[in-house]
Image (spheres, each protein chain N blue to C red):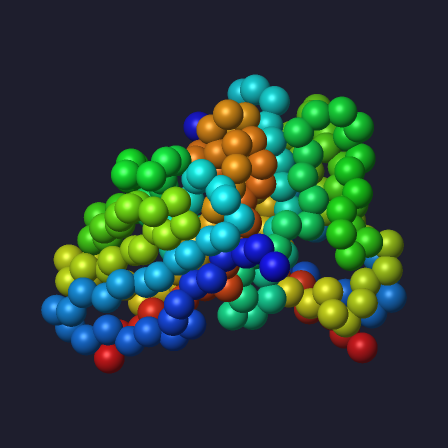
Length: 111
Length: 114
């Protein structure tokens, strides 16, 4: 079955550490997205990519970085510059003018 | 820029009762509207979408939503709620040809009483 796989499901970060969240899709979608979800705030866009080797900042990109070397993969790195990284992170993908499909998320916590 | 308001943070209904979740949007042109559902610790699943045509759209799991341009609303309804419908529901508005610019509401948490 086609879908989006996010790993790991739970992740813990120490102070000053970078961590990378994985997102892989086999839906053959061109566009991929990373959202951050905090209680009571809905989803906020961190980064998006419409095509391989190209990506754009969303509303809250500070402290995050991404890469898009393959169509199927869009990893998100939460850097030590992100001072409040505890959140639920959702990856999504879409084809042109179609709704976004979401993965099951990664919950990041601070040790 | 478009925005979405879900006025109800939390709603409780009895199993078998009808349900309506409110969604108001702000956007100058014709919006692309969605409802998603999220179970705890899971991703978002698309319930239904509206782009054009019939203003009453049917979705999965027995849900429907009605687009009312005059009221800038896209309320989600279900005639009879099941215990398995307990979840968080998100309304979202998008822009045609610019899927990067979707805006989500803050969500409405639905509790179903036995």
